[in-house]
Length: 155
Image 1 (cartoon, helix red, strand yellow):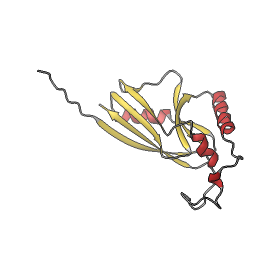
Image 2 (image 1 turned 30 degrees about the horizontal axis):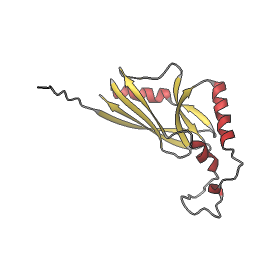
Image 3 (image 1 turned 180 degrees about the vertical axis):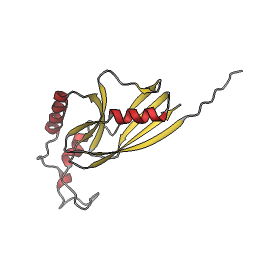
Image 4 (image 1 turned 60 degrees about the vertical axis):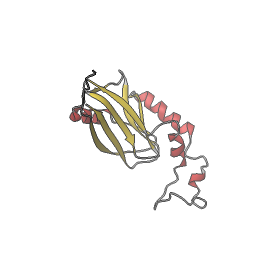
């Protein structure tokens, strides 16, 4: 007869609020996420980091200033702000409009090769990141307040 071992899984959630300065901008949020993981007291599990925005991504990469500049330039080359985007034509566009809508088709297009979230394993109560890996909120649009949901799942 097999013995069943039941573990109580915890799910804890926190929303980080951040103010960005420009687009594109890479904001290192690793320490804030790690602090939440520590407070969650989960020994093994996962942490999900999720952007609530279609023009701000979550990515893992290296926090090296010259590389950050290279990545910002890459995003601008990929989808320049001054190119034509149908999304920006407010005479034709009729859906998903807000008061004070800005022309940000470029930032939606820059988001395509990125992602809204990253998931990191928790082992021994700590995030298992590689030597140079850091977690970034990537602002693609303009200076504004952003929200990132951090959710820890584990035991």
